[in-house]
Image (tube, rainbow, N blue to C red):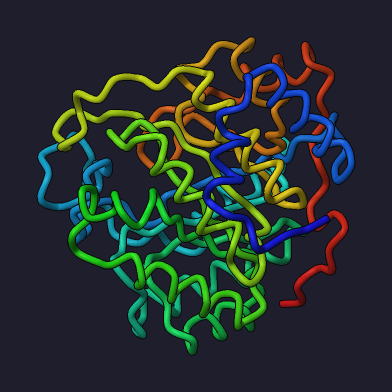
Length: 324
C-alpha cells in the first residue's frame, strides 16, 4: 500500500530496526514493486560548471570556496549531444544535465538548455535536468521541450538545513518541487548523509519526501564526498550501514520510487554496493565523474553488474514516454 501519511515515529522505528531485519523487509518490498535484478544506469553531466553564488557547504562549485573546480561556461548543444550518445552506447538509459545556477533565468542560456533537452529526448533516453530553482512557467517550458525528470534535492531535514545552506530556504526547495509536479514532470529528490546531521535529521528528510502529495519517482541517496576547500572538507566517511539504513527505509516508505545509490560509490567496495542493492537501491550514476566529484568508471560498473548478475533497466519502463 502506498502511503503519504507516515509519521516520524513510524519512520524512526523502521530506520532503527535491527539491520538484517531491515534489509530483509526492504528487499521484500522491493520485489513487490520492482525487478530486483534490474538497475537503471544514469549519466550526470555538468553542462555549466562552477561560479555558483550559493553557499551549500558540501559543494565545490560555490564561487566563495577555494577548490580545484574550474569555472566553465555553458556547453554547446552539439557537445552535450555527443556526450549523451556516448552515455547511451555505454548502457545509460537516463541522461541528466546539471548547471551550477542558483535559479533558472529566462535568457539565451536557458534557451540553449531547452535545445539540449529537445536533442537528447530524440535519443530515447529519459532526460533529466538539475538547474536550481524553477518557476511554474520555466517548468512548463522544460516539459514542452521533452524533459522527463527534474532533480532538486532537499539535501537534509528542514531543521538542519540552515547549518548547510543560508542562501535559499527549505521552502524554496519545496516550491520548486511543486512547480515540477504541477508541470507533470517526474520528480527526483533526495539528500546527502555525512554532513554532520543526526539520525533525526535523516529521518526528518525522509518524512518530508514520504509525506509529499505524491512521492518522488526518484530518490537519490548520496554519501558526502568531502572536497578540500569546502566547509565540510574534514567530515568523516559515513559507514555502509548508514547508507543501507537510508536506502532500506526509503524503499519501505516509498516503494515505487527508484532509489538511487548516488554520490559516494567511489569510496565503497563491490560488497558494500551489493548490500545497498539488497536493501532496495535500483539505480546508479555511471561515468568517471558525478558533476565534479569522482565516480567509479564504466569498466568497474560493468564488472560489478556481471558479478552480481544485474542488468540495466530500460528507459521509460512502466511509464508513458514524454513526447518532445
